[in-house]
Structure formats: structure tokens, C-alpha cells
Image (tube, rainbow, N blue to C red):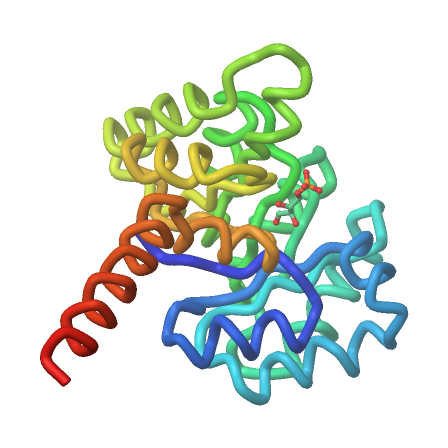
Amino acid sequence: MKFFLDTANVEQIKRINDLGLCDGVTTNPSLIKKEGRDFKEVVTEIASFVKGPISAEVTSYDYENMVKEAREIATWADNIVVKIPMTEAGLKAIKALSKEGIKTNCTLIFSLCQGLMAAKAGATYISPFLGRIDDMGEDGVELIYNLRTVLDNYGLESQIIAASIRTNKHVEESALAGADIATIPGNLFEKMWTHPLTNAGIESFKKDWQQFINRNK
Ligand code: E4P
């Protein structure tokens, strides 16, 4: 499973990219707002050092402007993927853009029907929002399992991005369910490589080694 970073924070992306663990980046208007920087400036800066796909989202919601905006965003760098919301206009835009060879990420997917329709429209990526589904008292991971089954049943080529990830368990369960990618908030990575027993183990090895050295002085 690939790891994307779900943030527009350049420092967080650099830290994980330096570990060789950043396969791509996803942003959205809320994440851009959080950084308080110009949309194009921040996306092109990320694209200057991340080799994998970088999703940048349209902010228009009618078909004509969505396509116009998507065409412009797609010129910002070679690895840009345009994020399009899951609406009737969005489906039409995905169809048109995929015919032009522009890569798309259909975002805000909350049901199997939505995922299936986005895949049939030709979306390069489809993004089911696990955390927000869980917030409604439903099972986000179940949607990943079901999407995996349906895409495989019909040979549909869209890649599944497990999005709205909030916990290590979301990452683990998305991998078990067959998501192609998990897009992970920058501050979650540290929790993924940390375990209290690892820290306790290091402390006890350090202590024993010091005692051994002191004894043999
Ligand atoms: C996906 O691409 C979105 O940017 C993101 O995962 C949304 O997550 P949230 O529900 O934590 O806002």
C-alpha cells in the first residue's frame, strides 16, 4: 500500500519524504486555508520535491468552471492530479478530463454507488472518507472492502485512496481491506512508527549494556 500525506504543510511533507515514505500528497481547500498560503504557490512548492502524484482540488462546483479550473491546475506541474467532488457536475467533469488525459481524484465519497460511478466515469483515484463515515456511526473500513470487491469484479482501474484517516487502526484496516493508498495526516506518521514497548525495550537494553560495560572496566 502506498502512503500519501494528507496535508499542505511543507515541513511535514519534507520530514516524511526524507524517510522515503511519501508516495504522494493530497490537499483540499481546508488544508490550504490552514497553511494560509497562496494555493498555486504551495502546490508548486510541494511538486518541486515530491515525485509522486499531488492532488489539488477545484473550488468551482458547476461543470464549465470545474473543467476550466481543472485544466489550469493540471498545468502547474507534471505530477498534478485534479481533485473533483462527487457530484453530477463532478462526474461529467471527470469523464471529460480523463478523455483529455488529465488525472483526477474523485473526492468526498461516502457510498459504494458513489465509488462505482466515479470509477465508471474514469477517475484515476477515488477517495472514500473513512473517518467521516465512522463519525456518522457507520463503518468506513467496510466501504473500502466493498469498493475493492466491486472494482475487482468489473476490472475497473481506479485506485482506492483511503482518506479521512485518523488513527493507526484506520491505516492497518485499510491495508487489510485492499486500499491501494492511504492518505495520512502529517502528525499521524509519528504515532505509526512509535510503540511504548519499543521505547521500553530500548531503555532496558541501554541499561543492561551500561551495566555490562561498567562491570568489565
Ligand atoms: C482527502 O483527500 C481529504 O483531504 C482528507 O482525507 C479529509 O480528511 P478529514 O475528514 O480529516 O478532513
